[in-house]
Amino acid sequence: MTDRHIAVAEILLDIECELRRSRLWQSEMPSDEALASEQPFALDTLDFHQWLQFILLPRLHHLVDQRLPLPAACGISPVAEEVYKQRLEVMKPLLLQLQRLDRVFQ
Image (cartoon, rainbow, N blue to C red):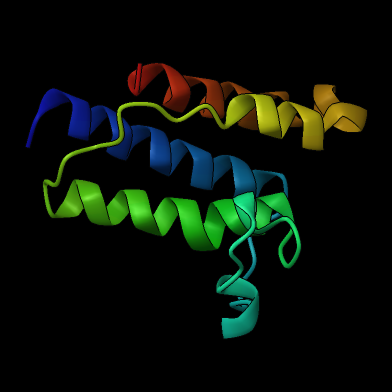
């Protein structure tokens, strides 16, 4: 496993911790239809935190676990900042983790 894979794995755990701390982590999976959205960030069927939990985190965990090539870029923190613009101070710890993820893919 490369240093980059290890860094991504650590950040993914930190993102999960922040979602749990913020009480955004869900125990129930969205429907298959909601997960099958073709819209960016599944914004038509999922809340942003659901997209993080049920789409982004599992996909990146898979890449890390299988030691597959990682994306060349990420860029999700600007989206998160827009989604949480009314709650930036409360969501700051999660935003910081998403910024870390963006940086590791630069």
